[in-house]
Amino acid sequence: MTHIALIGASGQAGSRILKELSDRGHRVTAIARHPEKIAALPGVTAVKADVFDSAGLAAILKGHDAVVSSVHFTASDPTKLLDAVRAAGVKRYLVVGGAGSLEVAPGQRLIDQPDFPDAYRAEAAGGAAFLDLLRQEKELDWTFLSPSAEFFAGERTGKFRLGKDALLANEDGSRISFEDYAIALVDEIEKPAHSRQRFTVGY
Image (cartoon, rainbow, N blue to C red; front, side, top):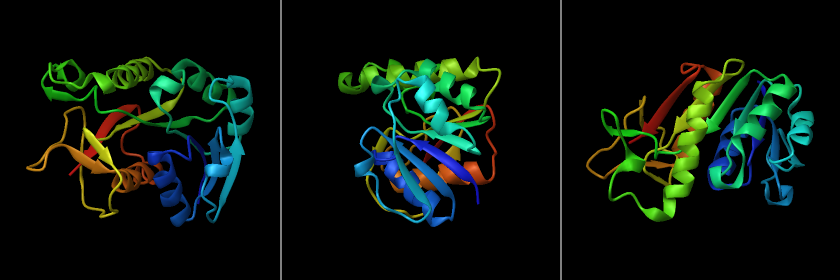
């Protein structure tokens, strides 16, 4: 059992990660702007925090074994998040990433394709910038887990593939449920295999 701080615990991905952590017996400090939206689960303590307040966030993060960040890139500042984790003295930092920076062919990112939807461009660009920042990070033991292109509420099947920097796809397209993504992320917390790397999960 480890003590995990989960930033963005009430979101679509965050709430599934929270349940997966709780189900596996971890203690979780579940952090959100609206802690009343966080599910009451065994081992979970809900805490209110502002992701733009580095000092306040650092005080909450202190003493945890790992921090998971599951917040929209357009609704947060990666520099402030990194500052908070460093100031808290927590070395292990996992980020719920985006698919936009994954490659559809060598050197060709998904976000740069002509048919990439404009509605997702700002969020995808924010995710790519966050990954670039992490790749320059000297202090933290970070991991950035990119979902597949379609990231949706579905089933927890436990049947998926892992990859590195290339977008995963099958005959149904590039897809992963929040529930199966959560399995892959918590697996990485329990048995780190992608230290200071990005990896991806898909069917």
